Length: 104
Image 1 (cartoon, helix red, strand yellow):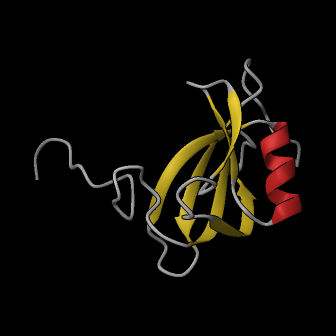
Image 2: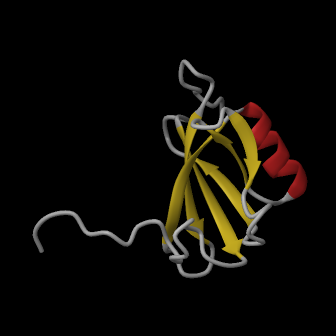
């Protein structure tokens, strides 16, 4: 499948715990981040705020071992199934999704 990169050369990546199925975070990848992820077996992303590649866990030690990479049906989003060596969120939470919005 051919991936569809946005006009900035990025693709949305959803990161999921390979064992539990819990969604841990979302991030963006460019071609180089995907290449490094596939070559190393650890998650690499593109930081839009810093304008540079980042190796998840390089400073915290909470690296993510990537088990599988899947593309969605349109090729415009990726799903990374990972084994995380610690919290995914910079706040220290296991998942970045810990804030409920609205109602029930």
